[in-house]
Length: 294
Image (cartoon, rainbow, N blue to C red; front, side, top):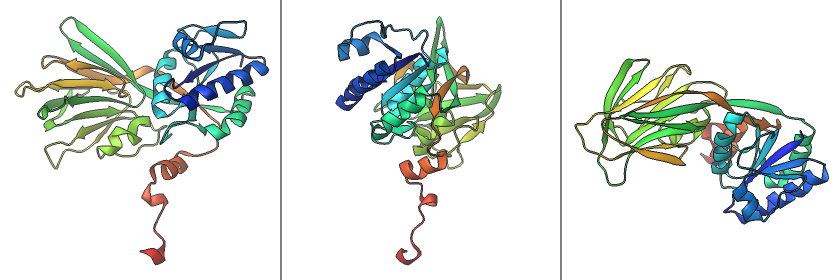
């Protein structure tokens, strides 16, 4: 564990403060540090024998993300093609994906440096917008969302899985998510909760105009194709993890499948998925009412 990256949320003063703390701890332990140029500029760090500033994380053994779930999603998507494991430190509201709280940072770094952890790999999705002279590609840790623009009417969608029609329906949009993303937007749209290590592709309509339209769990190796039916003129957008997005024209289609890379999360073994489900989302089955309190 020689070179470790630091990826803070640059809009949060607490994250910036902790970034300095992490840097001091790593340097005191004789480790090298990597940060992107934007981070170095914001934190006013200068390159040295122990600090490398570069937008490509070459030679990085692990990274620490300081922020909330959004920070972790952005960092995980960026690092996935390089195979770099990531430790998430929660400074946000929910912190469902992050591994430790800010108060646990010191012991967590000690375990990181001692390699006293496990790596949990999570499947990702790749979405391709296909059109004439166009192939825009996106990588998603949580989900790919196809939705109508603001003030637009419902959109008419056709879904194929492995070349077989699943159906056509009117809706506000569609969420294609990983198991990791099952507790995000898909859950709010009525999708199922899926253990993040159970590999599948979730297909969840957003407010469909049909009582019979429900979520579908496809096999992880299957290919999902979404087409826009052009009998309704609505402006349609595609977003990946709520961070990057493009417009989709009526003549274009979106192909979503399992990505050929995975996100690697550092797990210290302090809590299970079901504990997080109860503590973070207040899942009622894990918090039954007291029998004397109704």
